[in-house]
Length: 253
Length: 270
Image (tube, rainbow over all chains, first blue to last red; front, side, top):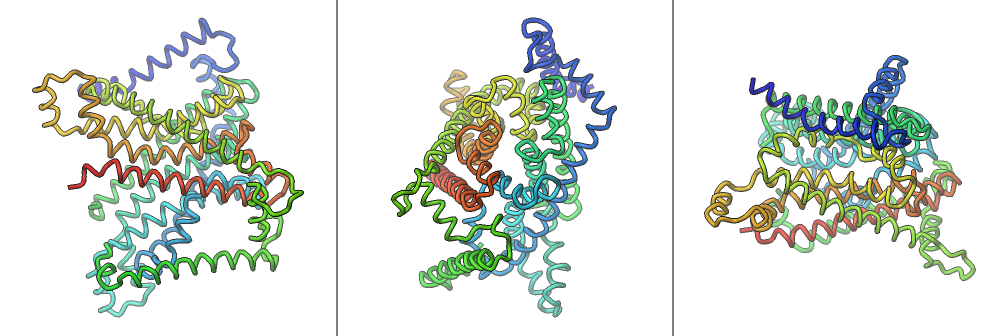
């Protein structure tokens, strides 16, 4: 019962907002080219599901976000481990990283467009750049905080550098890595949609842009809602996965 | 973290560290020089460092050539910075005000916070199409989207900060018979300040990103539009000059905020 009430509480506010929008667009704001009644948006949403454009665009956005995150996270992880384990390397890389890191990822959209043209690769490149830096910083912090005695054990066992990383360092940082990965998922999705809105004629971001440009506010609102739902679900999943790993591998202190 | 570092290496060690760090950066630039001059990467994408510096200086009207056309990069940089800072200030004010109103009452939190959590992961740029159809392609449209996107970190941080005010401070406020406004001003905001400042730092990053995207889409004059036009007409050195300026803006705004944060939170340190 208490749970049911909490659901009601959560849904009441958006329901009031949606009802207000419905009333406005049917009444004083009827015939507007900017807004549409939510009921029409729902209809547009159904037809987008029915003709498959919804799934296609969603798959493109999620796929390129995932691929970009994979590349950015792997590279960030590798460099982060090196910098985290070797204070000397961290000192040497410090200035270069501080110079490159503040470049906003969207500034690279035109460059990526110039190099790769429209399509999957330009979007993946920008997402990889955007996720690389936070992964690098967090992986470096995680590697620095690996229990020194574990590293001594690795030395005593005579493990090779590669074994040291795969058998000792990565398992010891796993819980922290998933925290970083959760952040990376959020960034990757936002950047992917932004790239599509700004330049790339594919995916959910382009779909919402086109709906606006063809003066179809119902479809535009449907896409806005769907982008919100996808963002919420993806973040929720990432959070769950991270909590699960934290329980299994020992929490992050 | 680096306790050993502090004791074993003194001032000289720090200097060597800086020198090594600078050497690595110089090596990267040298690699860039080599890659562009040897044509490992096509000149269409990768200009030479000299050409980039020349574009940067010409664009900022610092070039030596007297007959060079007047560069516009300084003006673009100024308008991007203006958009970013204005949007950020608006976002911070509105975010703090709304956050305080929602955060102060447990009832409001219970009813509204789930909706806020739902909207939080929404990419700010996804609101651009809606804003375009509502307000048209105008500077105020871009500004409103910048403020909207940058508001979330501050808003959520304020709500969080208000929800976690030390219970004894609440009791003090009740004992002193403080009104709601006095509680927000004298107890709520100061104790939520660390959260709010962290949120404001994040929202500055968001402001810069949304400003650039807004300039690209809505053709408002600024660095976002400048880099897009440079790329479309294959002027790689101007593109790189714009990217460098955007990086500088990001670096400077972050550094300034970090400094301000340390100043403002000094009272918290024991």
